[in-house]
Image 1: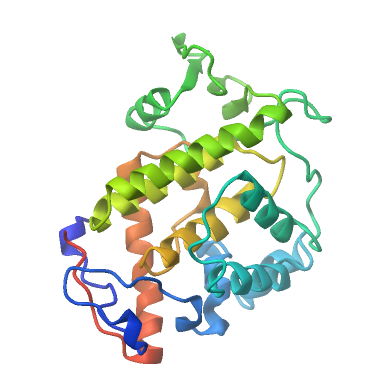
Image 2: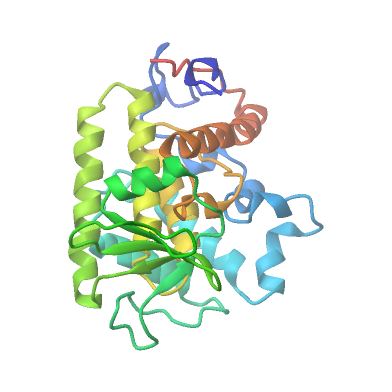
Length: 294
């Protein structure tokens, strides 16, 4: 789906200071424009949305308290004027991480990631097998690649993350940084993002690319031992979308940010995931449309 085909973006809102003309985005898209009864769709995997009482699915599994915690975090981080527009750095990122990982069950380890983590070097499955395009992008971003069964290796000097596939464990990401290095690495990613957003000012397409690039990087670097998915693909993604004039997005699968998809694929997925959210916003507030082709 091309960006020029996308018409489902808000052109005006009930708030006068958010009224914008054609070819522009809203300054922000407050989460309150989406009925609270639908917020759960942003933090429950899309594949479960048709299940009975899907909003409490994770609570019924191993994450008791998940729904209440995520509703609280969304209200604070996406519904607060002070939080929206806050420049993110590791300190703010860690604060949000603690918010999504506290008072909820099923989280085994809440500490930072690293090769020297108490439970061993941090690693996680990509879930989705990366294509050659995704591998090329990861290598360009400083991720080493080693496919043992295929005898393929692309080393990156001083790589802090490695993508590796073995015959037994499948495709996995391994961190190569120590716990004490994590904050500085995260700050570098946030700084790069804000530089890209400044360069993309007025260009919605490039801004959305900058957002998905940051979310993929944060998820691949996996700065915490657990709860990275809800932090990166549910909260930070939608926080950055809403504060930059995009509606929140219901992505097809949170695992898409684990290194298995190209930036274009991530762009298209996030882009497409805005449609159902906007339909609900329109039904609620009779919002119009906005052309984001430029």
